[in-house]
Amino acid sequence: MISQAIRNNPWKTLGVTGLVASSIYRRRKEEARRMEDAKKKKVLVLPFYRMKVVEEKSPTSLSSLGAGNPQSGREKTIEMPADELVNLIHEAAQDPSIVGLYGVFGNGGTFSTGGWAHLEEVRNAIRVFGTSHRTHKEPGVETPPPRDRKALYAYSNTFANPMGSTQSMQDFFVATAFSKIHMQPQGDLNLFGLHATNAFFRDFLHKYGITVHVWKHGEYKNMANRFTHSHFTKEHYENVAGILLPIHQHVCDAIYTSRHKQLRNFAPAKFWSMVENAGSLPAHVAHQIGFVDYLPRIDPLDALIKNNKQKAEDDSKGTSSSPTKGMETKKEDLEGVENRKNNPKNSTLSSKSKEEESKNQEESFAEKWKFETDLDHFKADSKISIEEYARRKTLERQKEAKEWKFYQSLQDMSESSVVMKGVLSLMGYSAPYFNIPKVSWKQR
Image (cartoon, rainbow, N blue to C red; front, side, top):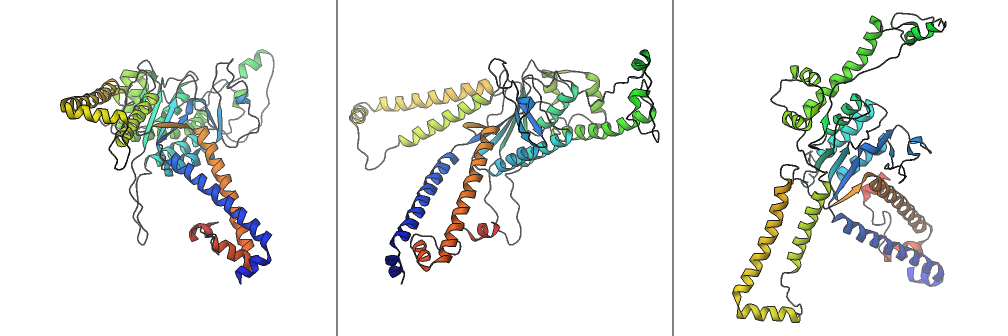
């Protein structure tokens, strides 16, 4: 029946066959690219010092004017909605090719956000990333295989932001979500707490004979106080303190909780008054207290990646150099074999010297960086910026949408004609799910 229908509609059958075949080719090519990319162990880099988190991204941002211009000497500001950044970090937590998160602060910039709520959202997303290796057993549900812990590293040349102490507090609040914090030995840490300023204009206005008439109901309606008073009233001060003090206490508790292993020698009750009265903390003092873990002279990211990449190359060379049955032996290899037969000691010495050289290189790298970073938990051999990762995820979603439209067209064709249904079945696309998992089909 199907063969007869195909003979009756040869051009239509040929068109559908070509469409499906080209789709299969594209999908297999894309799958091969994804598998090759998944072999790389990448670290996602978050340059907080030039990031601006907003509630909703504007089409034309004033912050980007002049940014990224080589003549201005400034790097481009990354403007990103808070929910997009949080979702990207969550996606990276489930991405097997992302093995670490690396946050960069300082560099004369600040992590610009819409307020403490945005900071809390981003910080919580980073903490979720750090616990993504955990698995939970549920009755009747197959337990997923165990996953390796993903590294969380942060680096800053200083946590003494020139924009003010609140910005320094904000940067360090986010940085404590990372398990390893690096700071340059010449840097400082400013944890002066939160503050609020309020300009009062009454005396200035009186100087020029200007009087402001205000009608207000209640002592705690303080918006107009800046025009009618020259200082904080008791009620005005209570309003401001009622906003700042709970936020300040929450930030201090979060920092202490995240660093509790390093700060275990200090009692929480007196700890923060001691820190606030100490003023600006030099890097070595911050390290002794336990606020930072390492004091590298430079950002260790590139050195860590280079070391892991070299290890991967050495491992691959060692694997490829092993003898394989059936391979043709080159002339040089035959000469080497002959020399080893004549003098077996040369072979032993040569292999030992290579092993010793590789070992010495590893030891020299470890010796150089052992006090400046954690070498054991960083597994990445390449890096990807948050901008590039966002672009890739956008392209993936667009491709998934196109594929889903294609599968919907297959469903329509199979329902419209028995011939099309038979052709699709012969090509491996059987109704009703067309090789898509049943759960995924229903989720769509």
